[in-house]
Length: 319
Image (cartoon, rainbow, N blue to C red):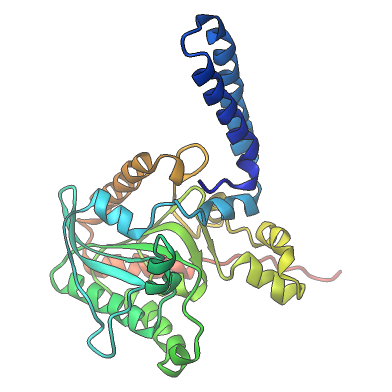
C-alpha cells in the first residue's frame, strides 16, 4: 500500500485498531476502548484532510491507486467502442477514445491514460501525448460533431511529450491547432480534470463549454517541480512552487478558469473510487442536460467568451 507522508499517523491508528480487534475479538471488555480509538481516528482524518497544503494535494493527485481514464470509462460508460489512430502517423497509446453511452447520453469519450504499473506506464508513455495523440483526439471530436454527439474529455497528464521526435513532428503546432479547432466544434464539450492537468498537454484537449475539476486534482501551466527549476534553479522548492502557482480547484474556481469542483471522498479519490465515479457521472449528465438544447452557433460564441475573459490584472499608476 502506498502511504502518503501526511497519512502515516492515520495508518498507524488503523494498524493499532486492527491489531486490538484481532487480539481481543472474543473479549467484550475491549469494545469501548476500540470505539474510543475509532472515534479518535475519525477526528484525526478530518483534521488531517482539512488542513492539506497545495503540495500534499498534488501528491494525492499523483497517488498510484488514483482512478485513471480507463477506470472511469469502465465504471461510468456503457457500450464503449474504442477507436484508434490519427490516420496520419500512428496510434498514440497515451490517449484512449471512442464511442460510448453514459446514462442516456450517447457521446464520444476521449482521455489521457497514464497506466497503472511499470509496464502499462511505459506503454502509455506516462500519459504524455505525442503529436499523433492530439490528432487522434481531434479526429474523434470531429466525428462527434459530424453525428451531433457530445464530447467528454478526461484530462490527466504531466504534459505533452517533450522528446525530439515529438518536436520534429510538430508538437507545438498540433496543440495550437487543437485549441483553434476545439473552439469551433458545434457540439457540447464537457471537460473533466481527473488528475494532473499540466501545461499544453492538458489544454490541447481542454477547450470546452464546461470544465469540472476533481477536488484534489490540479490544473496548471507547469508542474511545481518545473516551476521551481525555472524560478529558483532548484526542483526541491516544489512545495513553495505549488503554493505560488494557485493550482488547486478552489483557486481556479475563484479565478473562473473552471466551472465546478467535483467532490472527492475524504482523503482523495483512491480511498473510495466508486463514490468518485458516481460524482463524475452526475457532473457529466447534469452538464449535458444544460448544454444539449443550445444551438451550435451559440455554443461556439459562449465558448469563445468563456475563454476570452480568462485573465485578470490590476493597473497601478505611479503618483
